[in-house]
Amino acid sequence: MASTAAAGNGSGSILPTHTTAPPYRTHKDADLETTARRTRRRRCLCCCLLVTLVVLLLLAITLLVLFLTVLRVRDPTTHLVSTRLIGLSPRLSFPAMSLQLNVTLLITVAVHNPNPASFTYATGGHTDLTYRGAHVGDADIDPGRIPSRGDGNVTMALTLQADRFAGDLTQLVGDVMAGSVALDASTRIPGRVAILGVFKRHAVAYSDCHLVLGVTEMGVRSQQCSDRTKL
Image (tube, rainbow, N blue to C red):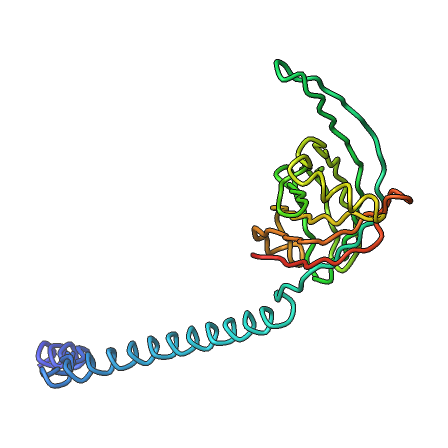
C-alpha cells in the first residue's frame, strides 16, 4: 500500500508538456506579402522621382530668372579720354630710298560696364585703324579688368604708319587743310566674365568707332561708337 501511494504521489508531481506548432503559411500568404513589399517599393520610387522632378523644375525656373535678369549681358559704353603723342620713328627703306614715318599715340579709353559681372582680359586685345577703307595703324591692348557695374580705363599704344596714307594722299591733304581727319577704329578684346564670383564664361568685347581728329588741337573732335559683348 505504501509503495503504491508513493508511486501515486510521484506520478502526480510530473506536469504534462505541450508543443505549439508554428502557423501554417500558404502560397497565397507569401504572394500577398511579396505584392505588398513591391507596392511599398514602387511608392518609394515614385516619391523619389516626383521630388527629383520638382527640384529640377525649381532649378530650371531659377536659372531662367537669373538668365533674364542677372545673367543677361548688356552692352558696355566707351568714351575716348585722352590721346597723347609718345613717339616718332622715321625709317629709310632701301633700295627705293623712301622715308617712312611711324607715329605712336598713347590712347586711354574709359569703359562703363553695366553688368553684374566683372570682365577680365589678358593678352589678345587688338585695335585696327582705317582711313577711307585703308589700314593705316593698329594697337595691342594692355591687360586689365573692368569691375561689375563700374568703370575702368583701357590703355593702348596706337601706331600710325604714315606711308599707308600715300594711297589717298590727295584726299588726306584736303582733309588736313579742312582742319579734320576722319578715322575708323575697330577693337576686339577677348576675356572672361565672372558673374557673382561663381559663374565664369568666355566673352569677347567689340567696339567700332568713327573718330574725327582735329588738326589744330591735335585731339579727338567727335566720336561715335557702337559697343557689344558676345558670350
